[in-house]
Image 1 (cartoon, rainbow, N blue to C red):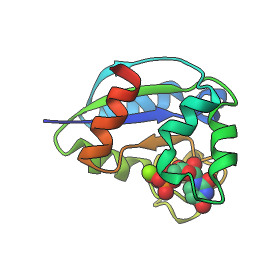
Image 2: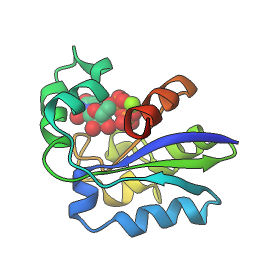
Image 3: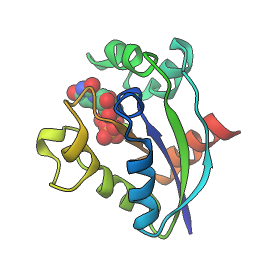
Image 4: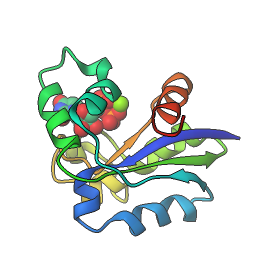
Length: 132
Ligand code: UDP
Ligand code: MG
């Protein structure tokens, strides 16, 4: 049994995709093990994405992530970290497989609806970032 951290980003919340997205993970056999509704401030978003600090998209990413409420949640199940990223689809929705969340709902690479942890270490860090 594995846990991973996902976030329905501000574009997902404003497009009324909360139920659709949670249902996709439940239908795939996963449990929603914790969940919150909150708006990140710049220092929180900056810290969450600190590994991207040197990237050209960092400032815009922090602006976007603080632009409205988001929904961090914990997903639990077999192979959750990898499976959740498969269900999300590639970072760039133009390259994401049909039927994935990003392919079906995201507008662009910088407005891509959902986050998912990419490793056991980041899942641990990101779950404790939001849920202690
Ligand atoms: N991002 C962006 N432009 C890029 C690459 C990434 O705006 O060229 C944003 C996008 O929101 C992405 C986030 O930065 O989801 C984190 O990037 P990462 O490479 O970790 O992608 P992810 O793990 O979210 O698929
Ligand atoms: Mg990432």
